Image 1 (cartoon, rainbow, N blue to C red):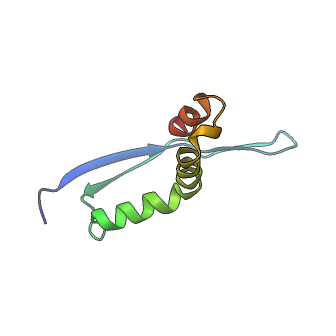
Image 2: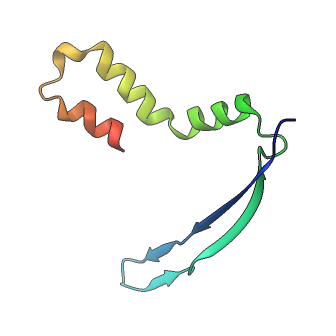
Image 3: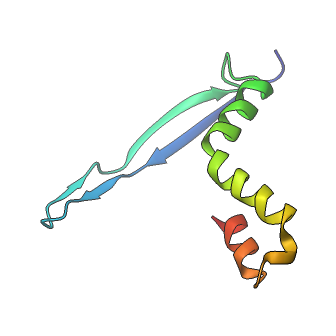
Length: 81
């Protein structure tokens, strides 16, 4: 395996229920070394495609039927997320 680099991450999740009740995880941090063992490029590509499959499918369909797109912002909106 090539060079290892230490990476850090942080995340925060807030869930607001319909009745207004709020749950907040606070900031949760951690670290890992990259490339993470078992996460070679093929595995990362597979996960990206799995997570983005709905947007990717919609994007492909839109590009294949671009003549039917009434406004380019429909396409750019998909690309921005």
